[in-house]
Length: 51
Image (cartoon, rainbow, N blue to C red; front, side):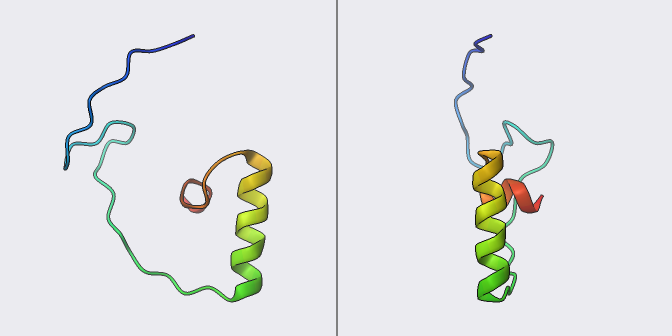
């Protein structure tokens, strides 16, 4: 099923109910690699995986 894409406007969320912020998190290299691996297996981005 295809859907019509919405034009993205800064400060107005399209997929989520709230605007995302850019927080900083600290991870060990091994944890970052594991998060990348798991998100790749699920075919999603690391940020979506963390959510």
